[in-house]
Amino acid sequence: MEKTLAKKVLAVDIDGTITLNGFGKIHLQALEKLRNLKNDGHHVIFVTGRSSIEAYFLSIFGGLTLLGVGENGGCITHGEIMTHKMIGDKNECQNAFSYLKKSLDEPIKEKPVFPRLTEVVLDRTFDIKNAQAILDEEGFNVGLFDSGYAYHINSRGVDKGSGLIKALEMLNADLEDTIALGDSETDVPMFRTVKNNIAVNNSIPELKEIAKIVTTKNSGEGLLEGLSMISDQFL
Ligand SMILES: O=C(O)COP(=O)(O)O
Ligand SMILES: [Mg+2]
Image (cartoon, rainbow, N blue to C red; front, side, top):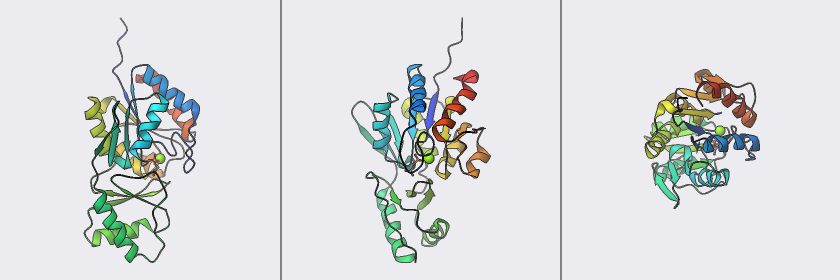
């Protein structure tokens, strides 16, 4: 009697992993692969710096699990009736943004993205490490993160790792049954949380260093390559 495989959870980054960073175009074969895995009984969810509403709608149109972790873990949108679980605190992120506007010499402005419920998203136009030091110095309880697509001001303790753990609780699923895929700094907390993970070839070196699998191909092609490398093991 063939052992039925435990239901796995695929936690998939969007920009730079199933799209080309900055453009948003979905790699269709990669999406088809994810839908097939969903149809095989696994959970497939997006864990992204984009809005959780974008992730949720992509899961509807993609035929995936109706749960999107967005805003770098700051908000989870889920269910047949669209419901938001807000984890981050937009107020403290906005206060930090206002302080940076007064403190930085370089230009700093919000990136024109889909509206956010718990974070602030900025154009990548300033020295992020210097900005983080200024916020720490002033005692702001926020983090500044670079997804390669945008800078994010998130509440302290809000990241893709903490957001994924909340999502797994909601799905009644286990960390050891989870596989994460990503490409940028914002995926590092997720990879530190989930030991089974795949960094696509266009990932930053810091993510590749901690990844269990690093693909030779970029973005959507890399997702397909990475999933084929594990499918014989446990998908
Ligand atoms: O919105 C962004 O920063 C891009 O997001 P992602 O790479 O985490 O999907
Ligand atoms: Mg990404």
